[in-house]
Amino acid sequence: MSEEAIIRHCAPTLASIKTANMFTCPFSSRQEMLCSLRAFNRRLIRKGLRILPLRYKDGLGLIYVYRPEKLARDLKSDVAGRILKKYGYNGCRDAACLRRLMERLHNQEEFPHEIGLFLGYPPEDVDSFIHKRCPHKCVGCWKVYHNEEAARVLFARYKKCFALYDKLWREGRSIERLTVAV
Image 1 (tube, rainbow, N blue to C red):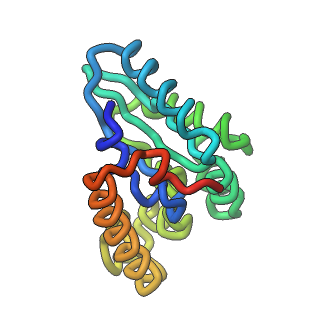
Image 2: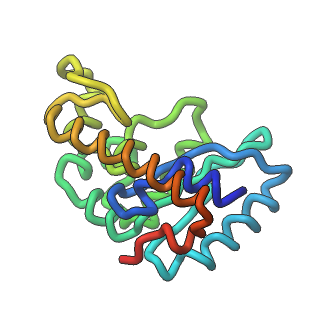
């Protein structure tokens, strides 16, 4: 896995303006994937960033890049708690919740709908997506059902971040320099 792949898919998380991103990446084996992720974690852990393999299947790793402090905060909301409980997370802490998410990803073909909570999406939008309570107002990184204006501002911020990080990386900035410490 290359620095470029992480930067291209996870710039807002590297910049600490988003809780997490995920992407798929080809690997020749599960062992190669784990070795690569360990190397990146050694380089980025002091910046408050973690990289996990959520799943390995058919030569593809589903890679999760996240900020543990932000994830812990996101999963504490009442709405998030209700959603997680519904899917068998049972009041777990963020590390145990991640294990449960990996379990669910391993046991089903489709992405579990609660995955949006692990990516920093507003819990109210995740809940509305799951229950189809109302029509969505717009689509960006996720389907927005509630605060459209705030979501559009955030989507624009993410887009600007992706462009800036791509430019800086092409100019020679390392992933360590592009990762904001928190």
